[in-house]
Length: 495
Image 1: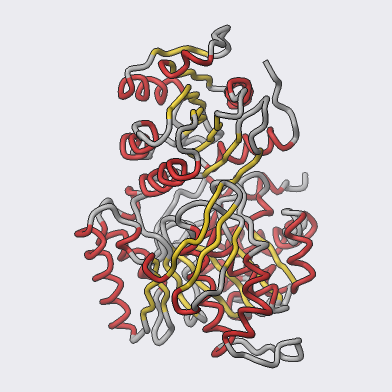
Image 2: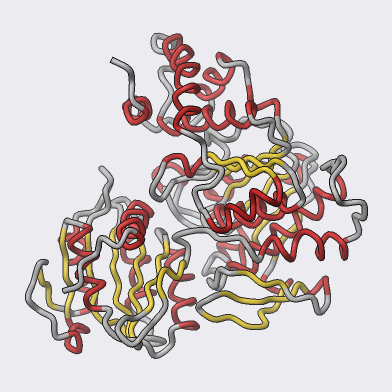
């Protein structure tokens, strides 16, 4: 019986997460080391990797490069993680069809055959069989090689130093986005440990861009400790460090539909982006800086339309039109605007303390004085208290009802357990769904829960019944993906 795609990756799930590069290096060696056949932008960080990659992908494609992009985790389809966009025409198609450029099922099946031959040879070896993520990483490398990508954006799954993506000797650049605390069992729970893992992607004589730790850590001591680690590693590797700070730009305008900002180094030029979260200008600015460096120092435009590499021309012809198209689903994504009958719906994959604080800040700025209905599902290994308090205790908006559910993951926190915790810290009453309770003006004292994400989603939507409300779905990306798919397909039922 032919192996299915799900079975192929599920077999990797039997291999426990094992920090280190022995398995991925062995797997890549057995399939011919495809990772050596393309140029790479290597990306690590706790938050913002996907958004940075999204901007970078758009800019490079607008310059008519053939761009590979590896990101994780996916929201709905595994194929989201491996994508190739070939130039500005493909970018325009991607802006209207978010599935465009994703790896095809036929390609996946073809690469499975190649990988299975290698995995068979590894089965009785000292390193053992590769994990699900290692299989996905190797498949991405095969695809980018086969597609003859000019440049590839390679996003770490967890950490950096021992992550399966850290198999490049000389990336074009190394990028470290916002640092914070997540995956403590593997990366540690202090700033020095976290920064040490992320700094593992820094390579000898290759430039580094860093999201200023002062803008990501709540404590100055933590930020300075993390920065010291990055600076030390850059010094040891003779890697030039470039820091992107919130002081490098100013926001001109921001609303729930997007924002405009200026980079102080470029005067009065206005950069417009579709993503409204408070941290997005900093990530867009990093992508702009990285791509300008690559255009001027690393990438050959060949016979393309670009014959003037001045910053002014690059900005006008490539960067400004590109970042206007960049969209990254599930990251403070406005899925529906407010109307007389319904409030806005926002999806945000905030799944660690720093992400939740950023979500609270963005809601506070963009939805001030509106009533927020929260739909939340979390994984059991998360720091619940540090995640929930900024969102549920804010004085910049009114927290209406809170609905808890269980993401589709073996690591999920049961909905009742999460609801119990929220009820305790907010002094609310618990209700199990389904329920007949529909007096929405009393919901500020209630926490609802259902293990079934469909039931929880439908009820949350039914409560979001006036323009002064906002339904905000946050937590595990497993939940965000499931809710997004349900709402886009129109499967929710009005009650």
